Structures are given as C-alpha cells and as structure tokens.
Image 1 (cartoon, rainbow, N blue to C red):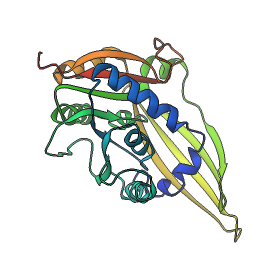
Image 2 (tube, rainbow, N blue to C red; image 1 turned 45 degrees about the vertical axis):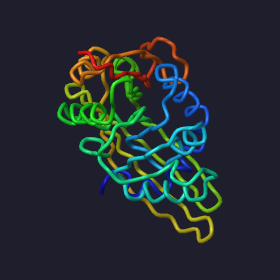
Image 3 (spheres, helix red, strand yellow; image 1 turned 135 degrees about the vertical axis):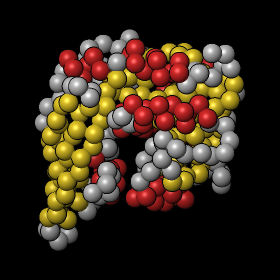
Length: 258
C-alpha cells in the first residue's frame, strides 16, 4: 500500500489541531524578509492544500505539487470552494525528486517535513536539485525537517491519537522502528476507523519512513545545490534548535554566487 493511499481520507481530521493559519503567516514572514517582492510560489508536497490557499490569500500566486492522487483530489476540491481569484492557487501532481514546472518562482517551499520523506542520499540530492531548478537569482526557499540531535536525544516511542468528525471516529497507533545507521525512523501507522452512522469499523496500516538530518549534512546539500543558507531555527519560534527541537526549518537563497 502506498504512503497516504488511505491516510488522505482522514488526514485533515487527524490534523485538525494544526494551526495552518499561524504556519502560513510564519512562512510568508520568513520568505518576505529575504525577498520582499516575492509573488510566485511553488510548494512541493502540498498535501490537501491548506498552506497553499492561506498563502494565496496573503498575496502569493501558488502552485501546489503533490505526489498522492488522493491528497491532490482533496486540495483541488478545497481550492474550488476557496474565496481566491481564479488561477492564484493551482494544484498539480508531481514528485519532489523530479518535477519540472518549466519555470522559476520567487519562492519555493516544502513543508510539514516533506524533506524527511527523502530517505536516501540520492533522493535528498534530487530534491535539492528540484529546489535549485525552480529558483532564479534572488529566489528564496524554505523547508523543514526532522532534527537529528533531537531524534537521537528523545528517541521515538509508540503513540496513540484519537480524533473524530461528524461521520468518523479514528484511532491511530504509531509504532516507530529506528535505524540509527541509516538515520531513518520507519513509523508503522495502524488505523481503526468507525463509521458513526453504521457502527462499522475498518482498519488499515501504512509505513512512513522518515529520515532525520544533522545540520552539517544539510548545510553540505545546500552548498552543493549552489544555494546560500540565510537562517535556520526551531519551527514557528525561530529559536536556536536544541536537543528537544524535532522540527527545524532552513531558509535559503539563490544568489548566483557559489
């Protein structure tokens, strides 16, 4: 079963507590500090499109790129209902590692740890090549990922989450397997979903391999891609990352100088 094949159907319910508005404001602030005139934006791994639509409302013309057809369908449906000028928030299917829009953008983002889904060195290099290919001199990029020092300090543990909406009750069990050599945590998600109307219960499993990174290796990838690191910090706070900081962002610029 492919990642997010069924997960997309209940994704928004499980993430109902995620403050997309605060995150979109944070992203826009960081991007505009480096590139005040940034207008066009591409988002690799846009999921169900919530960041994209909020960024479009803040003045960006966005293109959301998503590998999962299920996620993309939800993003397009949400976009069709949004109060946004036609064409200001578009969505298309594509892979972060090889997508080619045939043009550059003022801003490039990849959020909610999409970079950590690139588990091999080749995947990471390909993702950075994609970032670079969609930037011109003066363009800015922002991505976040799992911070290695925190992952190895606070080892992943089994977690249970419950969520519900008008129609469904959802129980998710997350069981991590840690491969320190590969710096990959493979999370086995087991879902139990109850239909409130019929009482029927279904279940399914998915595996999500997630790579964590140490600052030095990410900085090497940034340099190899011909980009300049402008800022790194704890997601949403901008504090210096610590051993308790799982989510760290990197803000980079294409300067035209190696």
